[in-house]
Image (tube, rainbow, N blue to C red; front, side, top):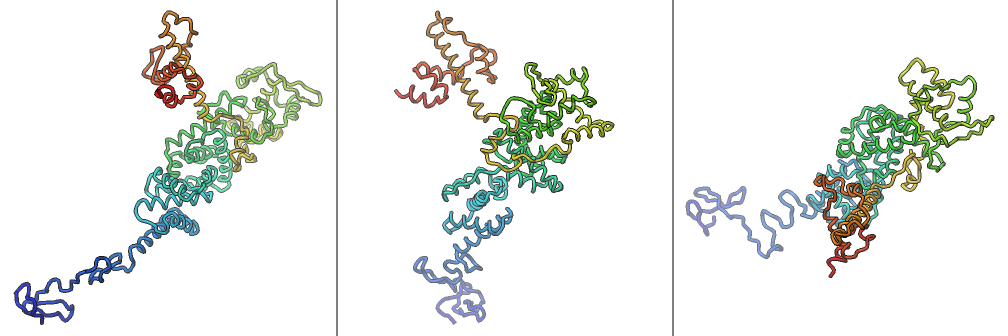
Length: 526
């Protein structure tokens, strides 16, 4: 019994020890006494170990310290994210090694560490040359693409890596083989659509449609187009959702693809009738024409009939021989002449056995006659047999066999090789075209500014300067809705140009458009 202290309840000095727990209790009233096992920590953080809490543990129920627990949770988070991304064990190890290298083996915890794991996953897949969209990783990591992109840039800069460019062809192949919209399509048709899609994707690269744009909307647009081309029921909204891209952007890229194909169709005899609305009816002929052009070694850009893929010598000799089935009457000539721009001064000389001189008009009518009969095959069943015989006779392709996939553009090529190919249509980069338009616009503005300065300085002699083309000035200021009725519209750019001209700045320098630099050099530097 302890008589040194009294009970807190009855104030009697009858404090004893409980046999079971060892705690101090009052033997008179049975009340448990406070602060029985309290052990004061003397000496700071390195003092003796307390009774209830052990120094250096991560909490109750564990023997790991803080650093070990942090590393364990970080490795577990990496494994979970790699499982959601579908990475193999080897790729997961590469991501983990990259995280260790970035954090010096300390790992981390919190939102920034999750974004770091996603960034390392993107970098590992890009280095390996396998398609992994940053949008997909951002959705799994639960962050926006800009935050993830900034983390990718920081990791690449820290590790001093050089990433290869995004391969849009590999991305298209991965999408068409793994998209749920194409899961029920046969493997043969997938292979056919893959070659057609690679051909169109590389044509879009040649036409600079992918330059400065996000690649996945372009992939979605080509997927929808080749699906419609092969009678596969696919909706652009579904494809956009599967690729996790904006539907509006996919529609814009799809429209640009149709517009480019319409421009390619201008090289065909009936190309003037092809529009965006009916391009799908002519798509097989247009793509076949593009494929034949890409396989042709002839670099002559003039329109001719040498690259259409037929034996013209045999075709014309046979058509003009006795008993041929392609006799043209006056009505056919009138009806078909609308599809061609005939230059009567140009003659195509065919060196046959009898040395016939066949005009381009005659060749155009023969080609149109054969084209019309191909259309008749789709709508008229009564003439199927005869038309099929004629197609077989002249080696023409049937509607279902229009695609051969023999062009090099159907395979993955380097950008330099793509640019050198001829697919029937060439275009300059949109940025270059916009730069040329802006250059011409600034030239017109300089001309107008000089006229205004001369008119202000010499009012009586304003008529001596060359007359300004009002039409060109209206073209310069086109698109400014707030000024509709003014003949000479002026804005901040006109005032800057006038100021620079008054400070004797060369017109060549002003035409480049570096207004801020010129103002600092010639106006404010005094």
